[in-house]
Image 1 (cartoon, helix red, strand yellow):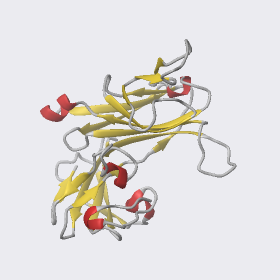
Image 2 (image 1 turned 45 degrees about the vertical axis):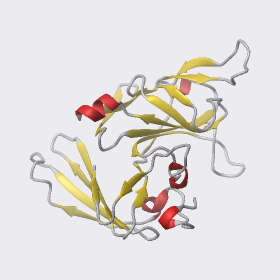
Image 3 (image 1 turned 90 degrees about the vertical axis):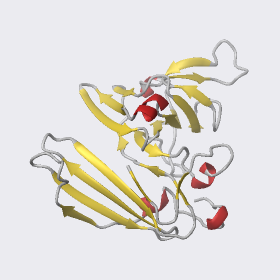
Image 4 (image 1 turned 90 degrees about the horizontal axis):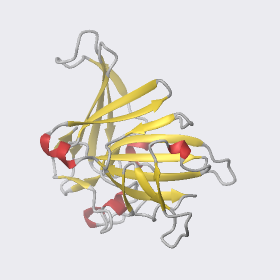
Length: 253
């Protein structure tokens, strides 16, 4: 939860945001006209409770098995509306996990547990991240390849945000993001003009939200709009990454 400023001063939002905390209705709908034969679609709709907006997600499973997700966010207020959006699939993290993300993309640190990455806001370039305190000895700081997260350290966790390549954003070229587990590969393509960021949560036995609980292993693979896990922080001077809607405006991606 975080307090907001400006026209929404004093407002507190739930953990993971309003979309996460609602049980929204889903209905089967006709597949888009440009979908291939055999395609099936469903739409889920949310209504803002603490902020004035409507949100819809349409998922289409195409005949060849590809999945397309389309989103629409509409402001229903009479003041500019700040927002962050992130997908949030949680995936297994094993010794075989490999991340195929844009090389040299700028990385910013949101959180770190059991690994020294420079603290909140520290800058790196994917996939070679500097690990170790600035005054470390011959044991650090050193550059480590994070494309194989389970090989970095025995126990650690971190949340990172990548800025997707601006060349792709300018040209409209789609950016491919992928994760591999052994012989299996999951690919996701986004238009960087619409979805300019990527969040990466790595938990290799370094964190648990439960007091006295046992840390576990998972990975969140998150195309997103805006940097940071807090809207209040995204509106602040350090991150300055919140997206905005004008009154009545609809944004699609």
